Length: 253
Ligand code: 1JT
Image (tube, rainbow, N blue to C red; front, side, top):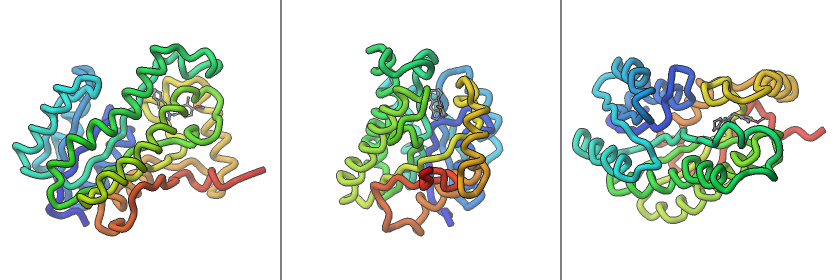
Protein backbone atom coordinates (compact mmCIF):
# COMPACT_ATOMS: atom_id res chain seq x y z
CA UNK A 1 0.00 0.00 0.00
CA UNK A 2 2.92 2.42 0.65
CA UNK A 3 5.34 1.15 -2.01
CA UNK A 4 7.65 3.95 -3.22
CA UNK A 5 6.59 6.18 -0.33
CA UNK A 6 8.93 7.74 2.20
CA UNK A 7 7.75 8.51 5.73
CA UNK A 8 9.20 10.28 8.73
CA UNK A 9 8.33 9.08 12.23
CA UNK A 10 8.66 11.34 15.29
CA UNK A 11 8.24 9.89 18.79
CA UNK A 12 9.71 6.41 19.01
CA UNK A 13 11.04 5.82 22.54
CA UNK A 14 10.79 2.02 22.66
CA UNK A 15 8.93 -0.93 21.15
CA UNK A 16 5.71 -0.03 23.00
CA UNK A 17 5.57 3.47 21.52
CA UNK A 18 2.55 4.37 19.39
CA UNK A 19 5.05 5.81 16.91
CA UNK A 20 6.72 2.40 16.62
CA UNK A 21 3.37 0.70 15.96
CA UNK A 22 2.80 3.24 13.16
CA UNK A 23 6.27 2.49 11.80
CA UNK A 24 5.66 -1.28 11.81
CA UNK A 25 2.38 -0.89 9.91
CA UNK A 26 3.92 1.48 7.37
CA UNK A 27 7.10 -0.55 6.91
CA UNK A 28 5.32 -3.87 6.43
CA UNK A 29 3.25 -2.15 3.74
CA UNK A 30 6.30 -1.09 1.77
CA UNK A 31 7.27 2.36 3.07
CA UNK A 32 10.84 3.54 3.61
CA UNK A 33 11.16 5.31 6.95
CA UNK A 34 13.25 7.97 8.65
CA UNK A 35 13.14 8.14 12.44
CA UNK A 36 13.94 10.95 14.81
CA UNK A 37 14.87 10.42 18.44
CA UNK A 38 14.94 12.87 21.32
CA UNK A 39 18.19 12.80 23.26
CA UNK A 40 21.10 10.37 23.51
CA UNK A 41 19.10 8.37 26.09
CA UNK A 42 16.77 7.04 23.37
CA UNK A 43 19.33 6.73 20.56
CA UNK A 44 20.20 3.09 21.24
CA UNK A 45 16.53 2.00 21.48
CA UNK A 46 15.63 3.62 18.16
CA UNK A 47 18.76 2.29 16.46
CA UNK A 48 17.95 -1.24 17.60
CA UNK A 49 14.35 -1.04 16.35
CA UNK A 50 14.79 0.96 13.15
CA UNK A 51 18.15 -0.50 12.20
CA UNK A 52 16.41 -3.73 11.12
CA UNK A 53 14.23 -1.97 8.56
CA UNK A 54 15.54 -1.73 4.98
CA UNK A 55 16.87 1.67 3.82
CA UNK A 56 15.95 3.48 7.06
CA UNK A 57 17.47 6.69 8.40
CA UNK A 58 17.90 7.71 12.05
CA UNK A 59 18.45 11.33 13.03
CA UNK A 60 18.48 13.16 16.38
CA UNK A 61 15.74 15.76 16.78
CA UNK A 62 14.66 17.68 19.85
CA UNK A 63 11.73 19.80 18.62
CA UNK A 64 12.54 22.53 21.15
CA UNK A 65 15.68 23.15 19.07
CA UNK A 66 14.87 24.60 15.61
CA UNK A 67 18.31 23.74 14.22
CA UNK A 68 17.69 20.05 15.10
CA UNK A 69 14.43 20.17 13.13
CA UNK A 70 16.08 21.87 10.15
CA UNK A 71 18.93 19.32 10.16
CA UNK A 72 16.54 16.34 10.39
CA UNK A 73 14.55 17.46 7.32
CA UNK A 74 17.77 18.28 5.44
CA UNK A 75 18.97 14.71 6.12
CA UNK A 76 15.70 13.27 4.79
CA UNK A 77 15.95 15.48 1.69
CA UNK A 78 19.55 14.36 1.10
CA UNK A 79 18.83 10.64 1.46
CA UNK A 80 15.43 10.25 -0.23
CA UNK A 81 14.91 13.51 -2.16
CA UNK A 82 11.25 13.67 -1.05
CA UNK A 83 8.78 12.97 1.75
CA UNK A 84 5.30 11.45 1.41
CA UNK A 85 4.08 11.21 5.00
CA UNK A 86 4.92 12.12 8.54
CA UNK A 87 3.76 10.69 11.88
CA UNK A 88 3.97 13.12 14.82
CA UNK A 89 3.68 11.19 18.09
CA UNK A 90 5.31 13.63 20.52
CA UNK A 91 4.04 15.08 23.78
CA UNK A 92 5.53 16.31 27.01
CA UNK A 93 4.45 18.02 30.21
CA UNK A 94 6.29 18.17 33.54
CA UNK A 95 5.17 15.29 35.79
CA UNK A 96 3.74 17.64 38.46
CA UNK A 97 1.39 19.11 35.85
CA UNK A 98 -0.33 15.73 35.35
CA UNK A 99 -1.28 15.45 39.02
CA UNK A 100 -3.63 17.43 41.24
CA UNK A 101 -5.72 20.26 39.89
CA UNK A 102 -5.40 22.07 36.54
CA UNK A 103 -5.88 25.42 38.28
CA UNK A 104 -2.36 25.17 39.76
CA UNK A 105 -0.63 24.80 36.35
CA UNK A 106 2.47 27.00 36.27
CA UNK A 107 3.33 29.36 33.43
CA UNK A 108 6.39 27.26 32.74
CA UNK A 109 4.51 23.93 32.62
CA UNK A 110 1.88 25.48 30.35
CA UNK A 111 4.50 26.87 27.99
CA UNK A 112 6.44 23.60 27.84
CA UNK A 113 3.37 21.40 27.32
CA UNK A 114 1.99 23.61 24.54
CA UNK A 115 5.36 24.08 22.84
CA UNK A 116 6.38 20.42 22.75
CA UNK A 117 2.95 18.85 22.32
CA UNK A 118 1.15 21.33 20.03
CA UNK A 119 3.49 23.89 18.42
CA UNK A 120 5.85 21.12 17.28
CA UNK A 121 3.20 19.92 14.79
CA UNK A 122 3.16 23.29 13.02
CA UNK A 123 6.95 23.41 13.19
CA UNK A 124 7.36 20.03 11.45
CA UNK A 125 4.52 20.68 8.97
CA UNK A 126 6.26 23.85 7.76
CA UNK A 127 9.56 21.99 7.35
CA UNK A 128 7.93 18.95 5.70
CA UNK A 129 5.87 20.81 3.09
CA UNK A 130 8.74 21.64 0.66
CA UNK A 131 9.73 17.94 0.62
CA UNK A 132 6.14 16.82 -0.06
CA UNK A 133 6.37 17.67 -3.74
CA UNK A 134 3.67 15.23 -4.85
CA UNK A 135 1.40 16.01 -1.88
CA UNK A 136 1.55 14.24 1.44
CA UNK A 137 -0.12 13.19 4.66
CA UNK A 138 0.62 14.24 8.23
CA UNK A 139 -0.82 12.35 11.22
CA UNK A 140 -0.64 13.33 14.88
CA UNK A 141 -1.86 11.73 18.13
CA UNK A 142 -4.50 13.23 20.39
CA UNK A 143 -6.55 12.10 23.35
CA UNK A 144 -10.13 12.55 24.64
CA UNK A 145 -8.87 14.89 27.39
CA UNK A 146 -8.73 17.54 24.62
CA UNK A 147 -12.52 17.85 24.64
CA UNK A 148 -13.80 16.55 27.99
CA UNK A 149 -12.27 16.90 31.43
CA UNK A 150 -10.23 13.83 32.37
CA UNK A 151 -8.88 14.02 35.94
CA UNK A 152 -5.10 14.55 36.04
CA UNK A 153 -4.75 15.06 32.27
CA UNK A 154 -4.86 18.78 33.04
CA UNK A 155 -2.58 20.93 30.86
CA UNK A 156 -2.10 18.05 28.40
CA UNK A 157 -5.83 18.34 27.66
CA UNK A 158 -5.35 22.01 26.84
CA UNK A 159 -2.33 21.15 24.70
CA UNK A 160 -4.28 18.44 22.83
CA UNK A 161 -7.14 20.91 22.23
CA UNK A 162 -4.58 23.26 20.67
CA UNK A 163 -3.18 20.32 18.68
CA UNK A 164 -6.60 19.36 17.27
CA UNK A 165 -7.30 22.98 16.32
CA UNK A 166 -3.83 23.17 14.73
CA UNK A 167 -4.72 20.11 12.62
CA UNK A 168 -7.70 22.01 11.17
CA UNK A 169 -5.74 25.21 10.45
CA UNK A 170 -2.82 23.30 8.94
CA UNK A 171 -5.22 21.23 6.81
CA UNK A 172 -6.76 24.45 5.50
CA UNK A 173 -3.34 25.99 4.69
CA UNK A 174 -1.68 22.92 3.17
CA UNK A 175 -4.65 21.51 1.25
CA UNK A 176 -3.68 23.49 -1.85
CA UNK A 177 -0.40 21.55 -1.92
CA UNK A 178 -2.39 18.31 -1.60
CA UNK A 179 -1.01 17.80 1.90
CA UNK A 180 -3.54 16.28 4.29
CA UNK A 181 -3.34 16.72 8.06
CA UNK A 182 -5.29 14.55 10.51
CA UNK A 183 -5.26 13.46 14.15
CA UNK A 184 -5.98 10.11 15.74
CA UNK A 185 -7.66 10.35 19.14
CA UNK A 186 -6.36 7.16 20.71
CA UNK A 187 -7.75 5.48 23.80
CA UNK A 188 -5.30 5.11 26.71
CA UNK A 189 -2.41 2.72 26.03
CA UNK A 190 0.26 1.52 28.43
CA UNK A 191 3.29 3.20 26.83
CA UNK A 192 6.41 4.65 28.46
CA UNK A 193 4.73 8.10 28.70
CA UNK A 194 1.60 6.64 30.26
CA UNK A 195 3.68 4.56 32.68
CA UNK A 196 4.77 7.68 34.54
CA UNK A 197 1.15 8.63 35.21
CA UNK A 198 -0.48 7.87 38.57
CA UNK A 199 -3.52 5.53 38.47
CA UNK A 200 -2.96 4.57 34.82
CA UNK A 201 -3.94 0.99 35.72
CA UNK A 202 -7.35 2.01 37.04
CA UNK A 203 -7.95 4.32 34.04
CA UNK A 204 -7.25 1.40 31.68
CA UNK A 205 -9.60 -0.81 33.71
CA UNK A 206 -12.39 1.79 33.66
CA UNK A 207 -12.14 2.47 29.91
CA UNK A 208 -11.85 -1.25 29.20
CA UNK A 209 -15.17 -1.87 30.97
CA UNK A 210 -17.09 1.11 29.65
CA UNK A 211 -16.09 1.04 25.97
CA UNK A 212 -18.48 -0.67 23.50
CA UNK A 213 -15.81 -3.23 22.60
CA UNK A 214 -15.21 -3.96 26.34
CA UNK A 215 -11.45 -3.68 26.07
CA UNK A 216 -8.63 -1.18 25.60
CA UNK A 217 -7.27 -0.26 22.22
CA UNK A 218 -3.84 -1.57 21.17
CA UNK A 219 -0.95 0.43 19.74
CA UNK A 220 -1.13 -1.83 16.66
CA UNK A 221 -4.73 -0.69 16.05
CA UNK A 222 -3.61 2.93 16.21
CA UNK A 223 -0.72 2.06 13.86
CA UNK A 224 -3.12 0.52 11.35
CA UNK A 225 -5.31 3.63 11.40
CA UNK A 226 -2.22 5.76 10.82
CA UNK A 227 -1.39 3.46 7.87
CA UNK A 228 -4.86 4.13 6.42
CA UNK A 229 -4.54 7.90 6.92
CA UNK A 230 -1.12 8.14 5.25
CA UNK A 231 -2.20 5.89 2.37
CA UNK A 232 -4.08 6.94 -0.76
CA UNK A 233 -7.18 5.19 0.65
CA UNK A 234 -7.68 8.31 2.81
CA UNK A 235 -7.15 10.76 -0.08
CA UNK A 236 -10.42 12.58 0.72
CA UNK A 237 -9.85 12.99 4.47
CA UNK A 238 -8.20 16.07 5.97
CA UNK A 239 -8.53 18.20 9.10
CA UNK A 240 -10.20 15.35 11.00
CA UNK A 241 -9.74 13.82 14.41
CA UNK A 242 -10.50 10.11 14.11
CA UNK A 243 -11.22 8.12 17.28
CA UNK A 244 -9.41 4.84 17.75
CA UNK A 245 -10.69 4.12 21.23
CA UNK A 246 -12.86 0.97 21.06
CA UNK A 247 -15.83 3.37 20.88
CA UNK A 248 -15.34 4.87 24.36
CA UNK A 249 -16.11 8.44 23.22
CA UNK A 250 -19.65 7.66 22.01
CA UNK A 251 -20.91 6.56 25.43
CA UNK A 252 -23.08 8.70 27.71
CA UNK A 253 -24.40 7.24 30.92
C1 1JT B 1 1.87 12.68 27.97
C2 1JT B 1 1.85 11.73 29.00
C3 1JT B 1 0.86 12.68 27.01
C4 1JT B 1 0.84 10.79 29.05
C5 1JT B 1 -0.16 10.81 28.09
C6 1JT B 1 -0.14 11.74 27.07
N1 1JT B 1 -1.23 11.52 26.29
C7 1JT B 1 -1.91 10.49 26.80
N2 1JT B 1 -1.28 10.05 27.88
C8 1JT B 1 -1.73 8.97 28.73
C9 1JT B 1 -2.67 9.51 29.78
C10 1JT B 1 -2.19 10.33 30.77
C11 1JT B 1 -3.06 10.85 31.73
C12 1JT B 1 -4.39 10.53 31.70
C13 1JT B 1 -4.86 9.71 30.71
C14 1JT B 1 -3.99 9.19 29.75
C15 1JT B 1 2.91 11.69 30.06
C16 1JT B 1 4.12 12.53 29.72
C17 1JT B 1 3.72 13.85 29.17
C18 1JT B 1 2.95 13.68 27.87
O1 1JT B 1 -5.18 11.08 32.68
C19 1JT B 1 -6.01 10.27 33.42
C20 1JT B 1 -2.55 11.77 32.82
